[in-house]
Length: 236
Ligand code: SF4
Image (cartoon, rainbow, N blue to C red; front, side, top):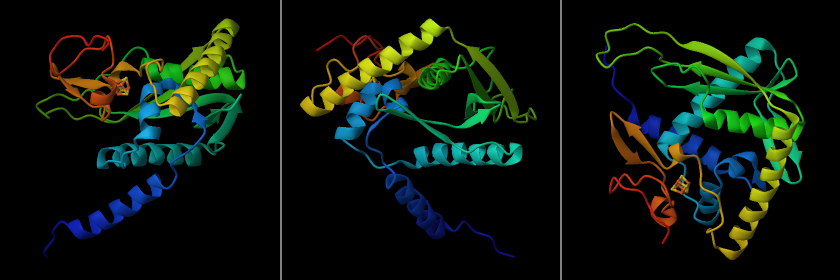
């Protein structure tokens, strides 16, 4: 028997998947645009192709959605909209907006990541639900660097409860940032567009920070740590 990697077929189908993702590039304003507005500004005006890394994230996320929806017989993705802000909720679990995530953290935190909470808050603000769920599938918790420990995927579900005033405040934020973003796209001036979540700018691994945003040099996010210098960026 001979077995070898078939790179040609691999590349062919990866390209087809890439084209499929690129063909669904959206217009309008989406909740995700308003969670990381600077990135949304640059993506619209300076679109870049979808990278292999993004394809990996998108595909694994979709696999999780489909599997959970199918196994639990849940309603598929639900489209929502408020004042021109569109969103898509992964599943309604017992009539509660629920975000499904997969994560590769080696440690399961006590509380969900801030950006997951922000996203669920936006969906709750749009739907008027005071409760939202964050359901994370940790793929490789409790691993260690030596690779000597057997690990298995684990689920965690967090329930978030928001006050009426938190929901009202979030609706106001969505509206304000949408207006700022639309104006910035029109005038091509991003100075008033709020920054993204910090983890979108760069990541830290084993104490080393690496820029991960492809728009870093255009954006130069003021006040953020600069992995190139080890200092903090100031406004130009
Ligand atoms: S550098 Fe940071 S704030 Fe600026 S677009 Fe990229 S992720 Fe957003």
